Amino acid sequence: MQFPAHNPLRYIQDLEEIDSLKIEGRMKVPTYVANVVSKYRMALDHKITEADKENLKKTFNRTFTKGYLFHKDRRNITNISRPNHFGYEIGTISRIEKDRYEITLTRTLNQNDTIRINHDNEDVNLTVAKLYNKDGDLINTADDVCYIKVKEKMSAGDVVYKTKDYFYHKELEASLEKEFKRFDLDISERICIFRFKACHRGGGLRL
Image 1 (cartoon, rainbow, N blue to C red):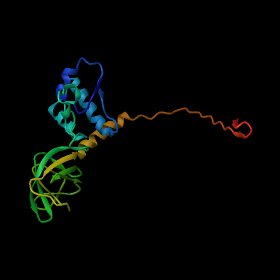
Image 2: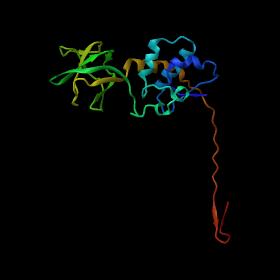
Image 3: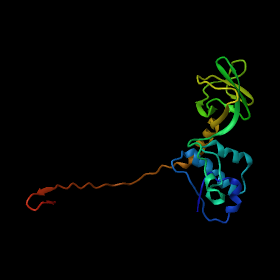
Image 4: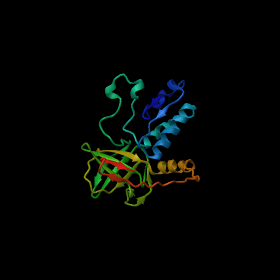
């Protein structure tokens, strides 16, 4: 049975009698596959935590739906408002100070994370190369309030979403190292060269 990866894990107990689940991962990066497959394995083994479920949001998603299996209204099977990664909300632009923007956070933001800021229904996407505290000092992480400097114009109240958690992706990449295996292949090849000669009388070809 084919089972969409964006289906909420809270329905997993309704599917325990199914022999096989196919999690769609076409054209997705390895970290996406590692994240989604591991969470479904945990759920089937009754070992998944709320934190694990939240971690599903840290790789590509266009928000979560029930898919075909549990959804009665087919118009809401998938999110058609955006084709790219939605991410998850981590805060808002709370103040503008000269050349920098203050972000009031509801979740942690780290240096090298990737965020998108929704400004007038347009996305401002950026990697947080530099993160500042109130005094203008560079910091590596922030839990409540932080400051960023960007050229794009934004407004107080703009919502900030995290689209890539740098450290979590590093963990996923590390988990993949044991999955790659190298082995020798004994391959022989044979090359055949044919010469073709046109036969004008018969209008065909002779080998």
